[in-house]
Amino acid sequence: MAFMRRPYLIASLAAHAALLALLYYYGAYEPRIAAQERQLGESRLLDRHAEMRRHVADMEQIEALMRASEGKAIDAAPETVRFDATTAESPEELLARAEALSKKIDAMGEQARVDDYARITGQDKEKAAAQLEASAPAPQPEPQAPPASLEDEVSASAQATAQATAQATAQAPDANGGAASTPATAGSAPGASGAATEARIEALERRARDVLAQRQRQMERDGQGVRVDGAPPGIAGRIASFIRGGTSGASTGSYWGNGDFFDHGAGQIPAVDRAAMRKGGGHKLGPGGEYANRVYVNNWYLIGPFPGKHGRDMFATDTFPPERAVVLDAAYRGKDGRVLTWRHIEAPAYPLMPPDMAEDSVYYGYTELMMDSERDLAMWIGADDDAQVWINDRLEWKGGNVNKLSFFQKVYDDWNGYAAAYNMNEGKVTVHFRKGRNKVFFKLSNGPNKSFFSMVLTPP
Image (cartoon, rainbow, N blue to C red; front, side, top):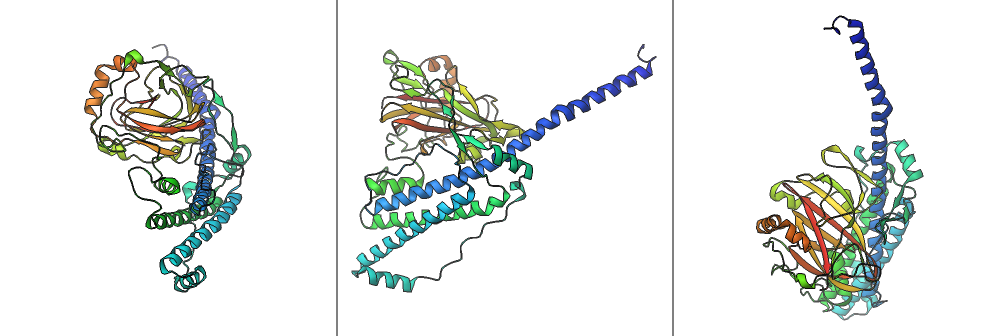
């Protein structure tokens, strides 16, 4: 009642509250939103640069595989592991490299075609080349780049900021679990004007893949590569593995009789010998790592949640930028419009549970495993609900299992018991690891309720 007798005081308090709200909005909230938008714009540029870098790197591998298929440097396996998502090269420099590689790949593909035709017809190579040239269809116009969408248009200020400051730091957990700073400068990051360059590089890589696929078919016809379970031997096997972009020939084992991938089988928890168990956690095996024969990988960079799908559609979730290239400095728009960035987490407890857990969501994780020597290890995977795992850019575990009800019941009925044994796992696969750094990347899709991810390494 006292306030009702002082209308001017009430009006003054309301005016001051409105003023404080305006000051907060324009002094704190609006600048924060503007900074987020700049960060998202710069991240789009970094991601587009990383995509171009990936296409060129794949063309380098295709060129090496084509050369090896001719018997040149056949003992030298082409390098397949890229630890730098971006480089200091400009889009124009990447395009120049892609065009030079395309010419080499086309020339090797044409020579292989001539050699194959000459062998089949019994002619010399010169006549075979002339006949093939005479019968060749008219060249098709090269694909034109699509116009840049409005979504790809980044403001001039964001482009200027990105070009001045964009350094995609390819950080990886160091031996102490921290972040090792290994900057990979994005250089002149592509804006909307770089869309044509990006499309041209992508088209060149597609053409290179077509040439490699044709070479694979030739080798299969010639009996140099026979389709068997797993990859065929030698260079034919490396070509087949690259083309399908999936598991390496080193991967062995099956998930309870369901083939190479644990797909639509019944989730089971394997029995373990607790008496012989020496547990450890981390990402370093050999000298400097823990003395253990059962290692829980608990050191990750994580990002999420991205919007997922519900029910069985959860196993066909969308692809988000981290799945195309890991750029640890990037930020993305995630579920419910929130801005997501990578966070380094050393999980204090088993299993790994994503922060900001949400239903119908997608999470990504990245780490590097350090090995003192080349070795094969059994990789045990468990997930609520679905997981895919890449080791050194090869898909080694594919989930898609819709029949895991018994697995979940066991896990949640005896959570403490299975956690104590690092054994919330539904199957395993034997994976070959390189000496030194090994890239590990996972995609975790969650449907209803809680979510977790388990990766445990043991002797095969």
